[in-house]
Image 1 (tube, helix red, strand yellow):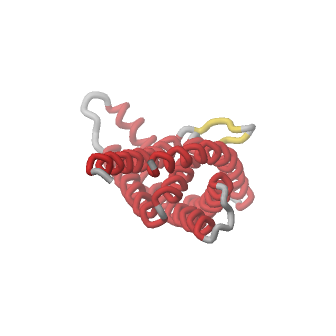
Image 2: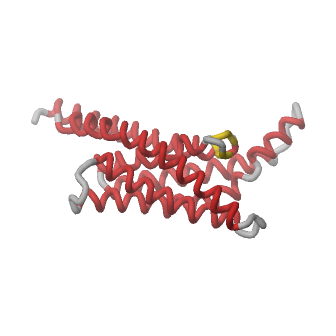
Image 3: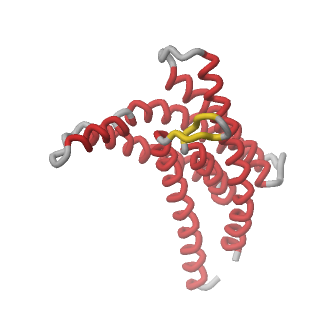
Length: 218
């Protein structure tokens, strides 16, 4: 192999990895911020985060598939650290007075002031969820139980998202006075919606994985 080809292969590898890394981080941050936007989803109230959050699982699956479990875990940890730092920075910033227009400061405080508290629950839930996703995705491939990336991605994503919802909703709504029936209803709406989008993203993901593998093997 010539030095020029080796450098080209390295650049291709780094470009693909860097792109996936940034996409994962952007996805979890967007999902975090869009949590505050409530919309009607098939007759139920849900957040816009349900559209973006499953994408982070699919990107994590692609990284696990193409670069391995250990690298996927490192990317996940870096992404969550950045997310938590952003959440706490926004919480601190929301308490800094706005010199030009106090009304803007009040609006910012109402929308972003609680992100630090939410981030704590999200971090714990996300750690359990993403670890579950990565371990299942890697385990299914290693044991050659399911050869299809699409099927492995869907299974691991649903398992990870289920863990995230169970842990997250327990932390977020514990002691709020909401009935178990209400909390369970919110959990089911969140899970069903995320499963729908996971199917879509995983379907697209299988073509991305094929393309990446072809580029890396060239």
